[in-house]
Length: 186
Image (cartoon, helix red, strand yellow):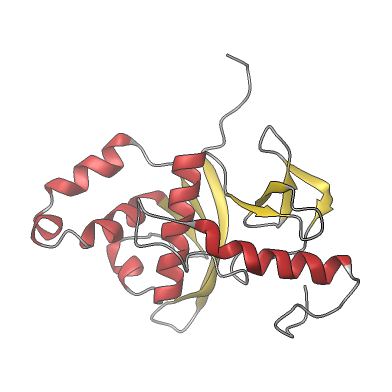
């Protein structure tokens, strides 16, 4: 084994954001890698036993460690997320816990070469999982529609992201200020 470090927490930005009781919007957060206990212990709770769909909410409330300036992230916070934010967090959970990195696969629109990009920054990932600053695609994960293609934790298919990413990469390589959808490129 090598002496490399394991990244255990990942930053994210929710597509919509959580609105607390005072009307404050919270979008930036952190998620940690799940442990075996994170996946097993919720199965013992009566609410999850009576409705298995609730497992997703309990599990995410255990691994989301920060969200804006909220002091605690509990099940009620996850319950009050917009559906697009819940889907985003489920997809993030899948990527970091199954792949070990927050990355999605895409392909060059010109040559077809497949590669991975960091889903948060849009940066091209090197073979060791590090983001390469010299090849930033300028894409935002939330704008790319992450989470549109999965059916919950344990069942994500990121293939639906490829077209959006290719369009954005193509628009950038052409020097265009707009994506294929007509929206300004960040």
